[in-house]
Image 1: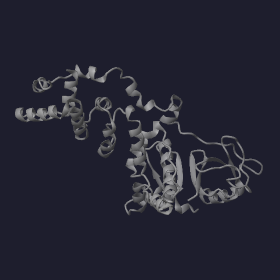
Image 2: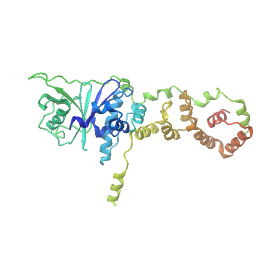
Image 3: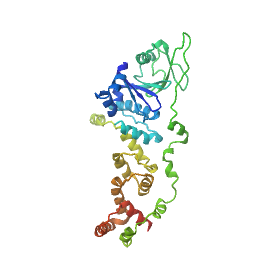
Amino acid sequence: MKKEDTVKLISAEGFEFVVDKEAAMVSQTIHNMLTSPGSFAERQHGEVTFPEISTTILEKICQYFYWHLQFASGKETEFPIEPELTLELMMAANYLHT
Amino acid sequence: MDMYIRVKRSKTTYFIRCKPSDKILDIKQKLQELIDQPAINQRLILPDTGEVLEDSKTLADQRVENDAVVALTLRKDENEFEEVNIVRPNDFYQARDADGANWWYDEIHNCSGNIFKRLIKCRVNDVLVCIILNLLP
Amino acid sequence: MMRRDQIRAHKRPTPTLVDLCVQKVIHNVRYLGNVGSFDQHMLEQILPHCTADQLMHVEKSTKGRDLSPVTDKLWKKFFEKQFGTNSTDEVIKRMKEKRVSFRWMQLFESLMGK
């Protein structure tokens, strides 16, 4: 596991989630941020800040990234979503094209 | 991909891909790449029980499962490691946990009785009524 | 046989997080209130699962946004179900004659109150 294969996602409250780029790029939005020529800063520092996404939601999204990779490789479990998170999570997922 | 664990210290969480057969030392070596601290300066602890995970044992041995949270502490000096420190977000959701699952739908609980009865009073358009009043037998 | 099932299972596309959340919201649709911030494509998926009472609550809870692009056809269905196809056709005919057009929610609401 190399540092340059990971990306740091930072929540509204400044909490940090270090995830594999492969996992983060489950999100089309993050994929574009990390690959498009316009987003130099993100690629340079390997960090993306989401001032609109709270810590709890961002962690849940990271868990989804890994669940997605597991599901795609044939491990089909259910992804748990707490009812009180659903609406906020749906908005964030929509924003992240996830 | 077999599994991942969430290694937490302060306000940072590392998502680490691993296998049940990985030894704790393997995990520390993966972490070493990310935090620039050799395995010997790391200690991994199960935050719920305080159990210190042993380098030579596997994740499966110590019942560390997919999505588990593991606390990382670093060496302070030759003999001492820092205390477990996982900062929890003080956001909106944590505070509501105690209320159970349905708080986000609060609105509806304030709305009792037949919703239509209350709404009908509001605005009935005269023309509309003309059109539909004698509609039904 | 089994093998074919396995292959089929394996081909199942991974649901997006939006899909999973939408399913969850549909499952709990009876608690839905203000949907002002939802994208239209989410509303198109979620709102058809509401009963008339639930949809009315959603409409009234959602301030500052007109949901009729999504809900007018749903209200027409409720209207038809409640008052029959003949009444529905009659309403359409009369609206045409009088050259007025009303939202089906409004029509439904008024008739329910009668």
